[in-house]
Image 1 (cartoon, protein in one colour):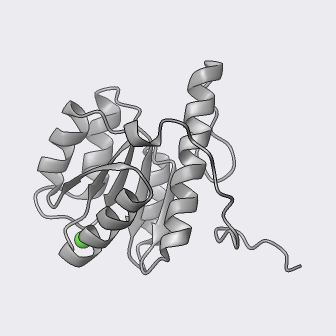
Image 2 (spheres, rainbow, N blue to C red):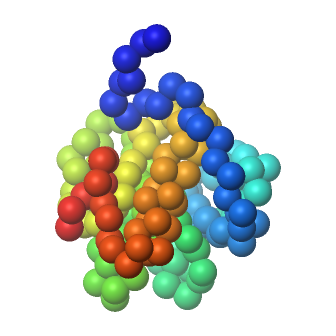
Length: 159
Ligand code: CA
């Protein structure tokens, strides 16, 4: 078999999550087609999905809502994604965040990880990759919450 390449799991393992229907994901992305596509596919997977097309509105929803995970685009109207993330962490919200970045935003990506993002995907990304990363982050953070430790290994940061 081929060796695993970093950042591209070739066969995401199906994960039996008992309470997936209670797991809400907030998608902050201003590209309508991408946002709708992500929403549709996450709902097919059994997630509850809330969306926002604007950074400021997204921050409000992230702050007031019950999202278990946030997908956060970087280039957003209203407020840039990195500012959304910074504000969230400043007010003590530790909701896991996966950054959606465009090609060439490597510096922003690194800064996002330093600000406390848990992972990132680079556009264009495949749905299976996105789902694998969502599951991995949820697994890590939910396992960490259960064990009472903030385990952030692998691709995550150690902030
Ligand atoms: Ca955008």
